[in-house]
Image 1: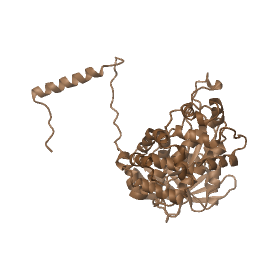
Image 2: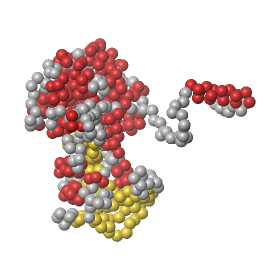
Image 3: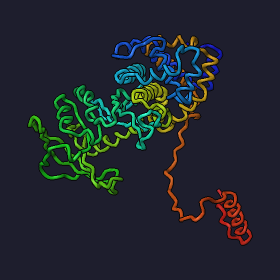
Image 4: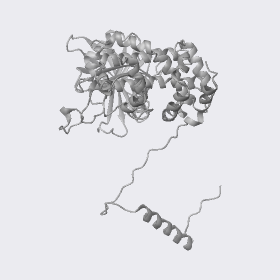
Length: 471
């Protein structure tokens, strides 16, 4: 597949850019995307502007290759025989089920490639773990007529994402245009698809009787923080101390739940973490509910598993900071939700790069040393020039590659990458300095530095300068 002199130069200088482009060409093949649109769209139709063209354009924006949708349209105007108004009309009409299907399609394609590499050690052996969390799309500009005189933030929708932490993929997203849609109701299809040996980790928003009993009836397992107002429960027996944890003391007790609708009862484990310091909300205890058998996970393992819930928050952070998932210029809910789902889809494509590196160098090393920020920085800085030097027809060979051959090609590219370019730089959290009240609105930085230099010079003259000991 490799061999072109121009392509080889890009492989040597920007291998991540080549890897991402190869994955996009393979997983986002136009024929498959247009077929996906026809299968899931109910009211929207295709004419001059195909769904695959829309996906290609939006991928440039969410990957920060182009700054805005309009800028991307300007650059691709010759290949898109529509007006800018038609483009925005198309964006604002993409149906939620189409956006959701796009995420599932990309996750499945990325998962097929990952299946050919060394897998990460599972969070809990013998269980398929999934982490669920919701995200409200950030407020948009008040460009719509109905919003121009409203001072409140205009939120275009809500999304519930499902993360597979063992693969690092967001395998599903459910979206709703009404931001006031309850997340637990929006996530109902996820809980209905639970299989035996599935472990669902979620926050207390999802800790309701219907959800917990539904997972139990499907022979699945759950681990959720207790919501005091959503359950009918009773503690059984005495609370047993299970020893110290990372940030507190662990206890375990049996709890009996009663389903208010059916009268069914279920005994589960309640793991309590008495915190050394209260959390931001003032809570001094965290109660975790699970039906995992003790032989599968003891109290300490349960607490450690729940901490892994933050992996989905980390994924959201990468989607927000490294990619561009929330375009505040897209005021229509469907356009904003499609933009978010496009960012999730590109996140899944990007996940193939560190996964290929982990196959060669190990998962632990990649987690500790490779920065997704620098990976996306290389892409956004090089992609446009690469596509000028290597037009689309040069990449067509990647389109029909089977998953195994694509996986082998990505591993070959990793072998030629200079990993020091993507090194993480870990820093301690900054200590906030207390600032005294300043009667002036501003000061001169130059004068402050001049005063510091004069103070240092005076110390030298008096011989009170602290010298560093010789190394």
